[in-house]
Length: 429
Length: 90
Ligand SMILES: Cc1cc2nc3c(=O)[nH]c(=O)nc-3n(C[C@H](O)[C@H](O)[C@H](O)COP(=O)(O)OP(=O)(O)OC[C@H]3O[C@@H](n4cnc5c(N)ncnc54)[C@H](O)[C@@H]3O)c2cc1C
Ligand SMILES: [Zn+2]
Image 1 (cartoon, chains in turn orange, purple):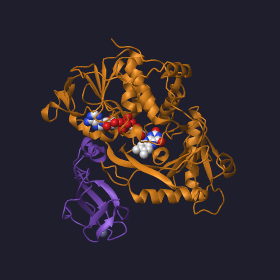
Image 2 (tube, chains in turn blue, yellow; image 1 turned 90 degrees about the vertical axis):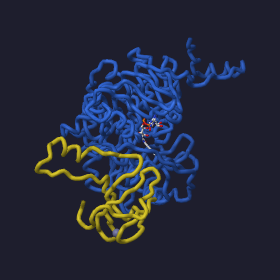
Image 3 (cartoon, helix red, strand yellow; image 1 turned 45 degrees about the horizontal axis):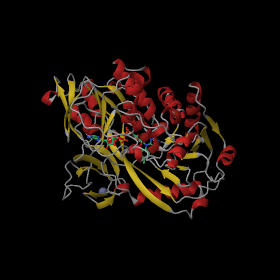
Image 4 (cartoon, protein in one colour; image 1 turned 120 degrees about the vertical axis):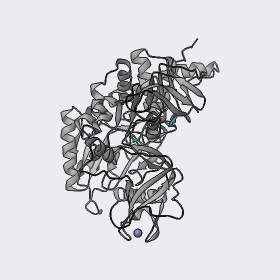
């Protein structure tokens, strides 16, 4: 019988410390069974949120999340944790804004301190062309009720005094798109919060459990896989599992999983690098992005500067970092903030990104019955974790595609109905 | 970063080239069905392993060529044999 874990609170912290009680593990480990109602592949924010909302919103608790490594080992534990909803397409804006809503109440809903800091987000424009895109985005945003506007250099200087807003730089700052509700969050806590929440409701999480094949019958392709077929289960390194519903939440590895079911995806896997400096006193109160200079930066609660750029320019499943990245990105950062030239770099890392042609995700049902995808999250998918989990759970529970994710279905590529988000997602994740 | 063996210029930093992407046969626009054409436009094999890919030597010989690389180890097949004709875009 499952026992509810103790709630986290300041009072509990004190009382348990006084009684020298050890806290239980954040989520429990169960033996792997050979059948579930739903198998979710991938223990990142998307897989865990899908499992959590299946249980929380629809009472579907016979669910297993299979993760080949440890929970949060993919992009969900490597991202720079920027949350925002000032996208370019109406479909994107309304979708990401729902996610921000869920993030806003997450600390209470999941009883986990996720440290969501809604500090404001500015995207700099260094040319007339990008200023025009900012105005376009601001108008689309406002129509959807999202707080977003174009501001000039004087206001930028007030928000971030460290920025060089003079006319001296090679690419002077002409204006910015200002999005006050945007900010940063503690990504690990989000992953652990969903895992703990799902565990409390009876969902099982299995780490070091790698899916090596997906069982499909009746399809048009080789071995009965592919369009027209239906899923019957998965094969893992720890044995076979039968399940009528299998969800692909594997981001950078999405094509490999999808191949196992015979479903072709429009995805290319590329690494995205990021880096962090030593901690210093807080001097940068907002998130700053510059598409022209291919750099974005924010300062953590600990005082470190976290910064990154756009994806590496070729496909690979290899996440080795490069000197070009640190040198190039640091150089661009110095153009924005010459004052930080003496700061030292602490470390750099990379994660795999599942890039799509239109910078929008691939979500929902596929031509293989029972095989769903929640992939194509590229460099911008952490912020979408909550809404994706909520909507994917609804799709599974109701067997219908919810309106919010309809535009992102795989079939949009057959209908030539792409959702072009490049202008808002290429650099500012 | 990646060192790309240009068949004309020798080893070059990937930053000197442009990555065109997965190399796939282009269907004949006159006879291809809409389905085949869209598959060519959007679908990607995206393998974790050997990949045939097209590069453009942007700041060197300015030729297109196709090479094979392991997308996990990032090693090109040795010796680097361009598997498509040079010059014209394959
Ligand atoms: C450096 C960097 C910075 C980023 N910055 C931001 C940002 O600021 N804001 C933002 O919104 N997004 C950002 N992103 C993107 C974001 O991290 C991802 O889009 C998001 O985390 C994807 O979550 P996920 O749950 O879909 O995938 P992941 O977290 O990648 O999880 C997929 C999981 O699937 C597992 N898996 C793979 N194959 C198998 C298998 N065969 N069997 C079992 N399990 C398997 C993997 O081990 C992995 O844990 C960034 C990404 C990177 C790399
Ligand atoms: Zn060359």
